[in-house]
Image (cartoon, rainbow, N blue to C red; front, top):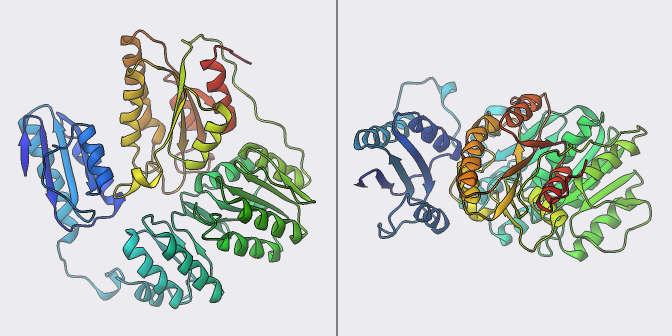
Length: 487
């Protein structure tokens, strides 16, 4: 361990810990009086660079490998520093302490063991580092299990091999980097608790699925299944293997009357094949493929925003959904740039396209460069929190636009954690002589553990303009930045 004043750091060589466990250990250490920041991440080059830039890691520290654990603490005093480091070490060691246990109390250590214990299970959820995830996914396929692969760090070649093998075995591989699925009403990953219904979704986008399914719920519709594919499924190298399988499943499902396809920007040729396949199914279908400008097959509705996809899907069931209201902006703000700081990649891309480039800046903290070796920002938003305060203080931004994601595996109180950060950000902007507006969209339902209404109200209490969809949030931010306060 090395320490200098209020900064302490240590390296644990070849020490892998679950990302959620690391987040909890860090949160507990932050509660110690006098502790400013605690960060636990794996030793990837990107993570190390982020720590150095945040002045939480010395640039001349010993070299680290991706499998090493980096522990960094900043505190107001040496006593607080020592207590925080001791707390981290103690809690990291605690799960490794052995204790007598009955055979049934011992967690299975392999996919095969878990399959044997579960008996009737037909799906494996895998969330381990990329190199291990590939091995576990192949074991799951060998055991006759469908795969929900949350892990990132999986090579494109491994993804293709897994998906082709799964298809040959009559199994589906959702992922890698699959954030959300809903199968027979059971949510996987960051899924939200939505009403059961007749709308089926296939998406190469986790937060895209979440936005569509929660808006469908808000508009009175319901979801039969939502099949996540992983963000690269519509790339040319992958060829839409999982998307086409998912469409086939929804085509044969009697409970699915309407189909929605969602994707980030994709290969034009693959998108053409997917849309053609959807048009042949014979069920009403709507597609939102960001950036797609190809020929639209007859009988298929193609829209440009996730909100439009949800509204169209509910309408195709025979209902008459009303549009979502925009907030009335009454306060003035300094004209300037928009900074979009997102945890969802598709939401970030949709907002960027709606706002435009130029002086505006958008960052997806869910991208692999930010998640390699650390918890996803939907689970641990601390990296984005730092970026919010930094953006407010640099003197250029007039509007910050954010997504706040709810769900079973998301942060237990994201708005509550965000609120004091936004108060600090506004204070930074005030000291820089600028006013700062904050616009946010909360993705979720009142059935989620965090409760949509509770989260929205927590944001409104600190002056956030809360919008009913990501589309509305992006356009509202644009109006404020351009000093056009539209109602």
